[in-house]
Image (cartoon, rainbow, N blue to C red):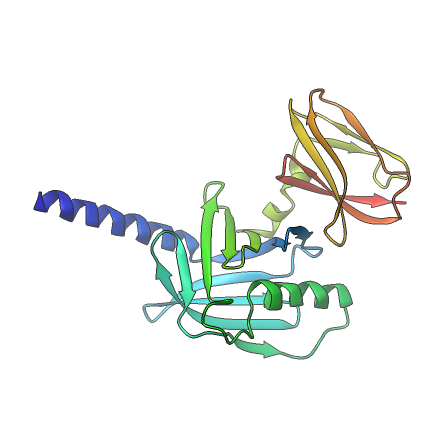
Length: 234
């Protein structure tokens, strides 16, 4: 019985160690899901969180445009971690010239990471999930908000390498999507993260979306809640 207990503890520790090692690298920000609204990162090559081991301690270092912060974290059971001290050591050179980058970076740092929170419960604790053969990281804070990362910038634009075919793009009225799998779901999302068009349970490999009445601008087509493709409405 004692041997079984020791083996169980060994394997539990081994699995936790292995998962922690997979976490320890740079992850590039793909999207934020805040208060029920999806907000795609408009600049996939900007924004990351880097987990690293320094002197037998784990640190998280985050960056987006003019904002950067670092904090020591404590790994907990069941794929969770918390901050050793509430708050992050922040570095900021003042807002940059790109207002869209400023706004998204502030959402990442202030709304998701809660870097200036002084509460002992808000902004301190996170659950993480690593999937897609170690290429995708999903972080959930204790308010239920979610940040999705990939281990390379190329993976953030994974939809562009998929088999889906979309045309025309830019588009003025009818957008055609081909090579869909049965029971596919589509969501068209505007730049603020609002779902403006939705089609569920598509049975055919080809479908169309009429966006004639939508305002000109940039939209994101999400396919089966996984792939996203930038659409330009003329």
